[in-house]
Image 1 (cartoon, rainbow, N blue to C red):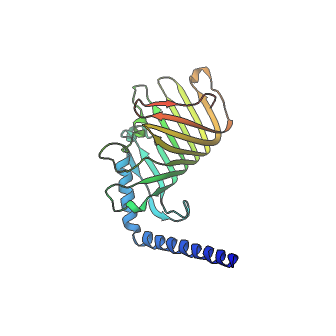
Image 2 (spheres, rainbow, N blue to C red; image 1 turned 90 degrees about the horizontal axis):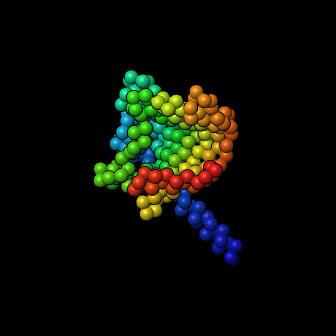
Image 3 (cartoon, rainbow, N blue to C red; image 1 turned 45 degrees about the horizontal axis):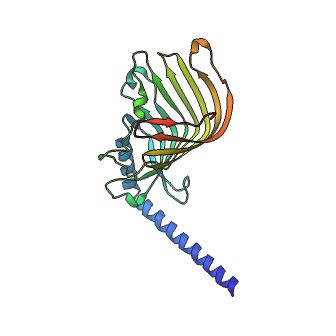
Length: 238
C-alpha cells in the first residue's frame, strides 16, 4: 500500500507540474506580443547607448522550465560610433530571463542575461574619450525600470578586448564560458565567477612586449564590489 500511495503521489505531483507548465506556456504564448514589446522597451531604458536587435522572440528551452526572451544580432553602440565605427558590444544571441509575474507591474524584474558568440570592446582614446561609460546602467535610482539587480550574467564563446591608446595597453581574452552569480548584501555585491578560456594577449605597454600569449585558464573565485565607493576587491593569484 505504501508503494501504491507513493506512486499515486508521484503521479499527482507530475500532473500538477505539467498543468502548471502548460498554463505558463499558454499565458506566455497568448501574451507574447506584449511581453516582447515590454522587455524591449525596458532594455532600451536600461542602457545609456544605442541598443539594436534584429529579431526578438519567446524561448522556452534555454532556461527551461522558465521562459526567456531571445534576442538575435544584438549590438550596443556609444554616442560617437558613427565616427570611430567600433562596437562596444555585439552578440549573435542573447537570452534574458524575466519574472513574468511583474509583466503588468510598473517595474520589470530581469533575473538572468546570457550572451553568446560575440565581442565586448572597451577603448580609451588619446584625447581621454572612452566608451566605458556604457557600463553604467539604470538599475539604481527612483527612475529605474528594474526591481532588483541581476542574479546571473553568462558569456559563451565571447571575446573581451580592452585598448588604451594613451597608455599603449591592449588586452585580449577569449571566454569559452563565463558565469557570474551576483548577490547583494549591505551595499556590497558578491560576484561568484567561474570561467575558462584563452588569454590571447596581455600587453600593458605594447612597445615593451606582451605577456601570457595564448595561455589557457580555468578558474573560480569570488570578488566583492562596494557600490558606496566603487571599489572592487579581487583575491590575489586569481
